Length: 175
Ligand SMILES: Cc1cc2nc3c(=O)[nH]c(=O)nc-3n(C[C@H](O)[C@H](O)[C@H](O)COP(=O)(O)O)c2cc1C
Image 1 (cartoon, rainbow, N blue to C red):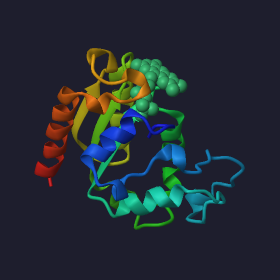
Image 2 (cartoon, rainbow, N blue to C red; image 1 turned 180 degrees about the vertical axis):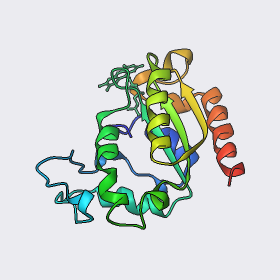
Image 3 (cartoon, helix red, strand yellow; image 1 turned 60 degrees about the vertical axis):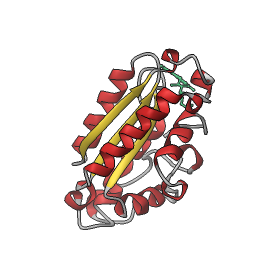
């Protein structure tokens, strides 16, 4: 969910096959605007952007794994755009909210300050969408002397790799 390919990208590639990863910062995503509540009327969302790419990956997954940085004490605005657009997905394209939400979720959150707050925002949002959080880890770059810190390179740190391996195992075990 990062706007750049830094720590979150490295962590995601360690846990998942690259073909399963979507980088929100590389998609063209628009916030809701200038609509007539089409999604609430089971009509097509007037936006013509990449939200459908998230939908396609989402629906083929049994577990949604979020790798998120903390931006100014919160998840990035890219997440909020996604969240705001979800009614256009579950109302229009599938058999409804239950089928969209019925899956597990796992979270990796990266930041030094307000990480717990950002993690809570993400967990609550995913739970509101109907997902079950099976595991969640926080990575504070300042705790790790090896690697480039907040600018990237934290994957060079063995402790982080061990943490990510345990995270991956919890996801596999919950299947
Ligand atoms: C716009 C912006 C705001 C940020 N705000 C915070 C913050 O409030 N708290 C924090 O701990 N880190 C903050 N950071 C640092 C990021 O959490 C950190 O760089 C993280 O590694 C970003 O993930 P990435 O490497 O995948 O981009 C901020 C970074 C950016 C670019």
